[in-house]
Length: 169
Image (cartoon, rainbow, N blue to C red; front, side):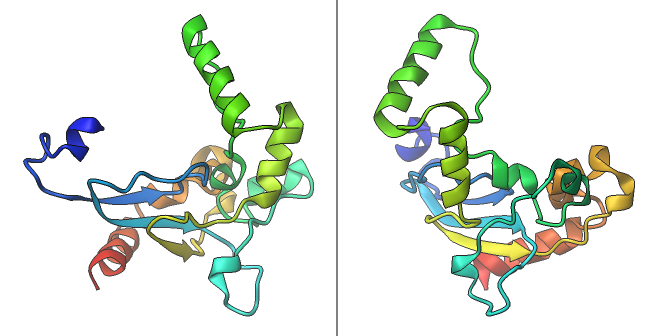
């Protein structure tokens, strides 16, 4: 990352960044970044169109998840506290120290608090909320609980067009 910020990798060029369903976890260091666009599979539950207040629609029971009625559940639920634990003891210690400083809750309570506060849009860059027509009849292995829609072959042209318009219009 430092090579990008210092301009040595891209020879001084600035990179535009697009994320597809990236969970809202931490702020982005936007130095060395031109434009930033976050594309999120979202089922609107607010009738007033105020997308900046868009909250995730958590499933009420586990059986709702295969029907992806709330959009991208991976983007919604992969908040702070859901990381895979590393096998290296030094890395485990570093994560524990980081969590003590920045993530004050422990275990399930911490995850639930992060999930409750979560919104669909990052603070850095622009956010595009898209109601992708996920094919639920294909099952979770195909749609990945709403997270696989971004790179589905039927959606690639649409997604690419939205990215170009979102960044350069």
